[in-house]
Length: 441
Image (cartoon, rainbow, N blue to C red; front, side):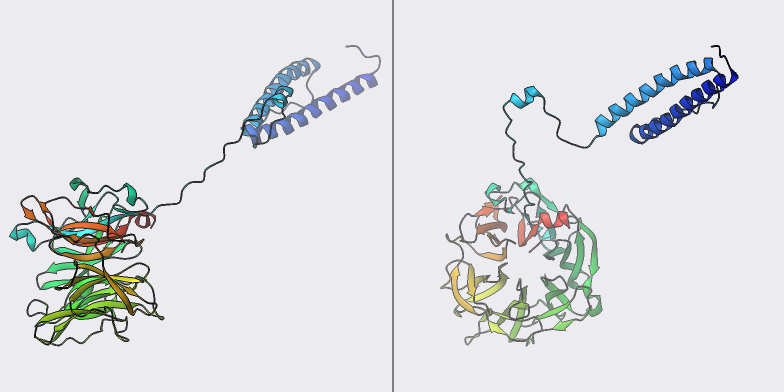
């Protein structure tokens, strides 16, 4: 290109430089934007004063790179743009609108219950070495309508791998278990944590090391998880009227041991402590069985309740012609199930209705259809809809074995939850939902 004057050449160079610098600044800005959205690198810097030939070459190459960068940025922006309503076309505006399907909220977590119980063999060697087991399939809760009338035998599994452990109580959060364990000196209380698949972790921590001269069983963890009540007695023979037991409470770490009752050798013994599920008149209460001799010299048992400090004792049942044991408080605190024996008893499982101050109002037999033999160890499900117990009214194998059953709260809908020719005892309901999320009764 020819210039008439040097001034014209300088103006052309200045205009060219201005164009180049504007493009460089624009390319930097666009590259920064593209780097932010799509991760593309910055465009290279251009020498501030190239020749016209180099300017034309660089302009052509830069335009191509710049167009590709803008195209990539545009595509990336389309892919990562926030959800926004698209501008409808003319065809869309004429189409029939599609009805929106309402979103169904996820159902709340459902309580599904399993049963924890004692199990042992029928031979003499294993009779003294029971173990703790549980059902691996649901046996109650909101899925109770789907539970089969008979739980398969292969769905029962041990909680821990060693024997000589039985009669467990599980905390309301489903994580701690206190149970009776056999030692060389007799029975005492042990504890273990439960994981989400009902396996005992770190078992064998003995609570009663501070009072090793006292034997113990029948543990019951308080609803708030701070204390455990149990039956304790001195060594010297089987617990009973001639070696009486008392009701004790202590903290879960074994501290603050307190005896609540005053047994008398040959005259009075206490057993089967059971916590009220809520405070009554400002305090938790303990139901228990008091064994004594009647006017004819026979041993009979009466049910009573007291505050957890041993005061305010009340009679828990009305009829005194039978012998009542093994109380189990319902989750709402309105009823207590128990075992009654006597000539006038219609079946072994009974319930007493209580008023708001834990005083008895009425009694009735629990089972609609009386079963043969005896039933024992009643235990309410956490929702109060079913009652588990053990019974030996059926033959499994060659013998009548103690098996775990349950009925609904009205005493009907009998279901069997164990199906092996072994002995079972002390069923306890455990909420798997609460264990997995991290209750039991």
